[in-house]
Image (cartoon, rainbow, N blue to C red; front, side, top):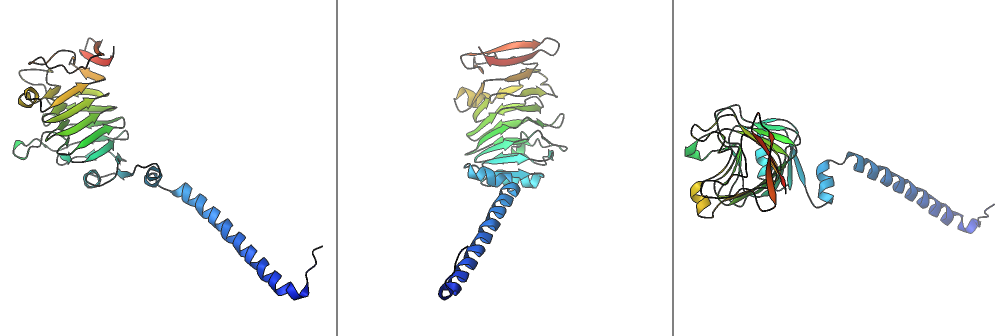
Length: 252
């Protein structure tokens, strides 16, 4: 049995009380930390890894987030695009299995609206996430790069009109995905499915390279009018569906 000197009784009781209070605080701290870990949103978890994420469910939220500072913008709902979105910074758009589409016409040459979303000046946009970008039939393109913007596409289905992916002035890389058009060009059919602006292409102001993906009615291995090749060295295009004239690009 522990013997306590009466002279030191008050001091002992004071120390004992302090230790008990400290243990309570530590216990509460552990419980709070566990609760915080369980309830922490994905954005904070990503921040711990050096990246931040914004989750969006509406068009206004999407525009705001793409113009903000988050490294990743992730869709939580299908979103109806009411005007072309221009991206002017480095960001990843994670479609998260959702769809971007437009229910009203967007095409407007007066305001330079070609597509649902474009990478513009200072833009460095990566689109990924196994989702879809679907343009309203007989309206606009799917996506574009302009004003020196960079655009990378992977794991995305893009359906456009005349053109699904357009590189007007910038650099586009297609790494994977599925690409098709609803409205065909009157003069070129499916030949403009993946396209560059001729004048800027010839001047070396725009590029478009295909490293993968599936293309309905279009063979990316065929050189363009001025001999421009979409496929880099070491990549090949294979016919995978004769009925729809669909090609798939893989490494040789």
